Length: 156
Image 1 (cartoon, rainbow, N blue to C red):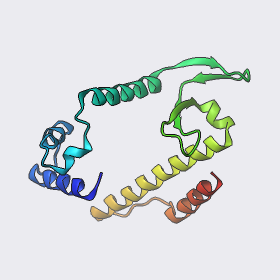
Image 2 (cartoon, helix red, strand yellow):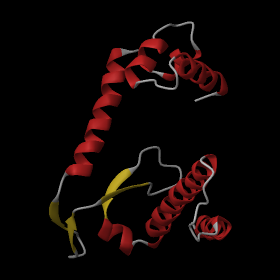
Image 3 (cartoon, one colour):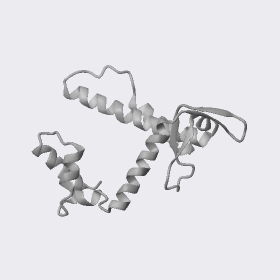
């Protein structure tokens, strides 16, 4: 997403009184004159491929079973995590919680990702509560969380 695309989206939101569906955005972006046009894949075969990859991701996230690892450590696959084995990997892979727990690098990676997500949502909560003139009332020091995140990222 670039600045021009974001500007178009904001303008569309203004025109639609802040309510834009995915379908409306897609229909708007069909116009080749829009900056948003380049955000989407218009080649049917490539679009179908990307759609099916997303479907495969969904399937993996929903599947539940037991698997025996080569080390003889059985993992109940009830939660899978999307991880990158190496920093230069293009694709992420799905692994069990057991594998994440047993692999220090993956454990730090997931903790860092989760902490980033938590910081984002805490900051959004504080921002939105402030817009309504209320006090956040949560005893979280975001600076401490960010310091912890920096440490995790340095270790990886």
